[in-house]
Length: 148
Image (cartoon, helix red, strand yellow):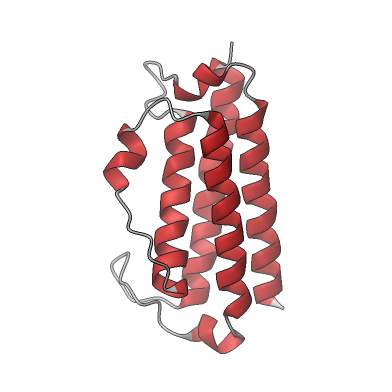
C-alpha cells in the first residue's frame, strides 16, 4: 500500500514540476534571480533531478548516476526542453526503482547517513517527497514573480 502511494505521489509531483517548467511564458525567466530570490527555477529543477537520481537512483536502484551538486546550482541557460527531458527521465527512474521495492525494503536502514542519524528507507523516501514539494512550491512562486 505505501509503495503504491509513494509511486503515485512521486509521479504526480514530478509531473507538476514538468507542467510548471512548461508554464513559463519566457524561457529565459527560468534562469532569473533577484535580490530576494537566490536560486533560479532552472537551478532548482536541476537540483531536484540531481537529488532524486542520487538518493533514489544511485543508492536504491544501483544506477550509474554520478551527482555533481555544485553544478545543479551553477549551470545556467539549459534549454527548457532539456530540463523537461531530465524530469521525465527522473520520473521513470523513480517509478522503476520504487516498483522493485518491497514493504520490507522500506523498513531497512537507508544505505547512507544523510542527516545525523540512521533512518529507514521508507522514512527517507517520505523526506525526499517533501523536499521535492518544497522546491516545487518555490518554483511555482518564482514563475509568478519573475516570469514577466
